[in-house]
Length: 248
Image (cartoon, rainbow, N blue to C red; front, side):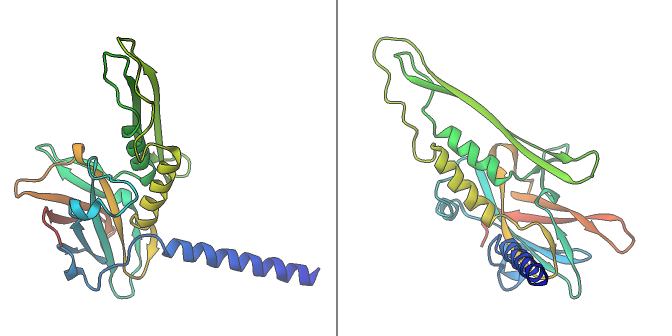
């Protein structure tokens, strides 16, 4: 029994190490210093840095192109000395519009579903062409019992044929439209997304913002804000990053 107990303990420790390694493998390798990004700003516990990934570069980051629908931002966090910082993608927003509307990034699962749906056979036709109807949404909030953040993706769709004069074309999805395409893209997006958790070392990763929902500010930059900082007095503060459209 003692031997069995030690064996179970070893397995548990091994599983914990694997989970820890997996958690730290998320995201992308942070650059050497915050100065290596297009913009930086320092809060109470950390320095945040960010760059907009150029469209031509972003097109080749993943198995399928998402740049028609999404902007890709590279975000980094450099905790201060002896500081531990809580990182959550939902704390980063882009502020825009006269009323200061806030747009959150979209999770990799929602991005991948959107790309799959847009690559299904197209709609319109009068001559018996195949059409699709699809929708995708993303919900974010807090569990009323635990207070923890909860996120979800919902989507749906259908396909049919509009009758007309002639046979419909083959009902084949374009690259990115197959279920396995969505799964591959989702895995890549999530693995390279900004890590979540508590960190005492530099971390970096991508955030995906919907093009249709974000606008540049008056200076031609994207007004990214981090809402999760708490100062020494326990008051929440905002760290602002004006990201230029031409980032390094």
